[in-house]
Image (cartoon, rainbow, N blue to C red; front, side, top):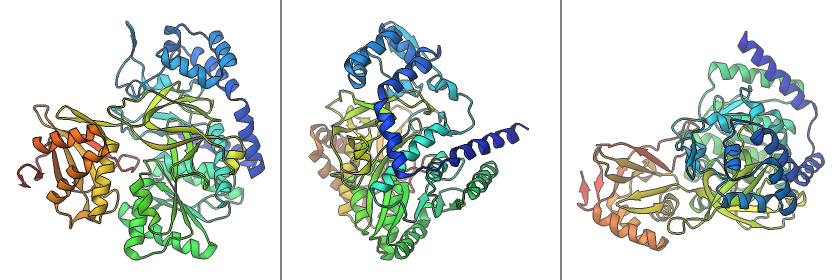
Length: 533
């Protein structure tokens, strides 16, 4: 009975969501309205979901710093939202990634609390039907996140303007994202249904389970009543990227343009399949999200003739930013400041070049409440006018260079994972290998000694392990003084090894840049001895 009731709620909500289709002019008007009411939206959310929720960790932080709702309203009115958030940050009203994922208690002075993951939930959405889960990359277990039809409606306006900016509203497009129970594919589908643009194909990294298949039947039947055909997810493993590349070329031949939305690592595999099969992808556009769109990935995808643009989405927030065709780089994105406020925190310049990003929720439809919250990413923010429909509507904050803040400490030397991967990307490319053909793995033995393993995938079968390590140690010092010191220490201490094997993926089928494990006794190449151990 409970399951039947949930299905009925899903169907009823979907009907209301789809009843009033979204057009381009209306999408721009909705965005402008939200931008004009940013401060009001934040203050209403703070009153209702922070100060009004006794479980809120953000409320505890604000009160510990001497803030109440009245003081917050006065500050925002006098100084503006971002200036007030920066004052709060300097007064320790913020949450680190470890605190937000509940790996560490929140401590301020002599006081501390140990919140549960659900304490960060939007109160009115606790227990709601539409739910997703984070990949669990940074926490002990995946965090459950609720979704709201209002959130999908907001994102639909943004996505409609994004497609209009690129001139692809009428182009055939496809997903290569996991189907349910993963949230990424269904999230994108529901957003596009709002403005009547379902995908033509849905390539999925995994098949739907029987419970998800039932929900999909409801969605497909409801969409059919509004004149839309929703495809079923087609199981498509990483090794079957050729199917996606062939579809892109075929759709481009039919319509002149074709679009794919995929994780960055999946998009790279499509490009590699196209390269091997000599499939020309000119006229194809790829939106790559879920993972960093690194320079190596951009170059590899562009070599096929396709254009590629970054997207930035987090399970906790929904849509964060997307790139338009007028940006000065493919990874320069418009931040959706109608939904979020973003600040940069002071960076540890000895470890990372860019500043950690702190997010604050403005949307009552978001599943998690964020207040100067670190989600584990860094990037560069700047104000820049833009002539695309998103820019005309008022989105003038741009974000680029988004990457994880993850750091490695081995032999007492700490280096950002992004620095290591940039060096390895160059070495692997010089050896003729594609991006994402290797993966980093940090291992720790029973005595606590750490070792970094570079795991090489099948695409690097012909690469000599010793030559690759020598190239890495020659390249790493070019990436800053810490990297130079690390190269010296790690070479002399045999702290890096090379192994062979397939990459480890997250539950959401994203490529993990770094995995962590206990000891692994499989054969490995020891740089100091120049032989397998």
